[in-house]
Image 1 (spheres, one colour):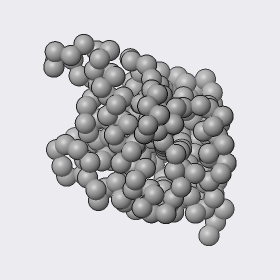
Image 2 (tube, rainbow, N blue to C red):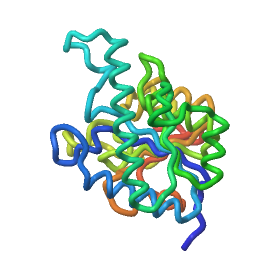
Image 3 (cartoon, one colour):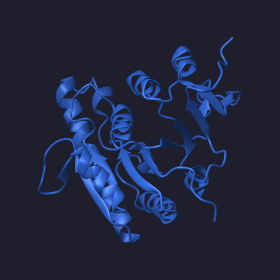
Length: 245
């Protein structure tokens, strides 16, 4: 088995990914499959932090037509991420992994408050660390929270698990002619307004030279192949030459 390319990663998962074929909530089969994928990577000696969204429960910052003000909606979205984090924590522990759930909003009865040095120590001890409740502030997405946590824990890369196999010039689920970019720069992502992550998250990646890899989490073994340095998905980094004419 080849040595992993990355010693420490931050895995970003969307809440919508937990839906599976459901319209709402958490699909037990999907979350179990994700836990098994994380277990395989952990067995390689990779330290794993995880940020998961809450869109399967409440979309927070994107919800503006339900009569709930944006700040309150964002707080509801943060709490939705905690529900998903607890579900993922349980699934990971069923697969034999040691875990810690850290939240940006204090709720000590169910999770530890986020403290950077404590999070790093948990990772060093071989625990899977799940970061919940976003940044703890409204108006910031879980993508931004994921990049922020990745920078704080000094992750080697942030891996965004999605339903498609990387970055495209348009939505490949609705456009069969969408062009795939195996590699692309932060600047081109922003210039083309590609929906890889929100602008704040991409800017944070660029300013901190944090590699971002977008890949299909639903293909078994993709996460393991990726951390072993194999070409999976799309790499977004500073070193890629411009592809914009």
